[in-house]
Length: 358
Image (cartoon, rainbow, N blue to C red; front, side):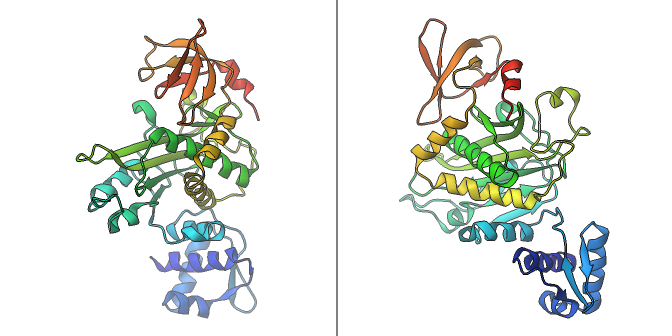
């Protein structure tokens, strides 16, 4: 960690503690293990980057506004504030990566076996269970069905969470559904905004998609069981017309509009989303599925079903009737018969999406 990062961390910790008091240059130098001159240079660098650091008459410094800087230290301080039991997780914060899911899978591939023969976690498995990778931008972000996920810097966050459950079967569809619930909870708590879910993995606000979720599993070839899962979550926080082309702007939205002020930092949102995901995964499954069902806004509406990776050749119209306990979608055909969808994709007419305005 650089001197600048250490100084910023100490200023943030003082601010987040609620004390609101300044910290002297001498104290910062002691805590960071550097000279007073190095602290002074770090303070100037941080101010040039946009941090609102005020000098006081007694020679101390205070962070008057929380800068929207995404780092492991700031993420951890935000997480510890609301989820203190999660402070010891393995976390990685990156300025840029190809894909947080791909990065997560690279970490898993470098580990020793994740589970012992009896299903208990190895040391590597325990470390990787609950690990999180956060990036400010992605160069090759991925969505479901092989689609790309545009991931510009500054206006969104991109998170992947590794799950290695002990003695427990992994069901990717359930994990995806629970992660969508967690995102809705986090956005509601921090932004006072109600979101909805389009089965199975898209979070919508004001008729547009603001979040996509991609869950990928890693299989143990000896047992044929899914040994671990990686939950990828991409959230658009602010509009980004420079990154999104006109076609994408028709469907992609953001939590904030162009007139809104961002009073929530990306580190705060990342910490809240992570904490909520872990919380939902540890809850009673029936409770989580019940909440998911309430948030899915397409129930009772006519949808077009694309059973084969979005192919229009085999698509058909149906009415979305229900969500099963394993997060599958039950649809009714025109002849009254029902089908249960375990995979595939469904779409709503634009008029139906436009009607979903919170």
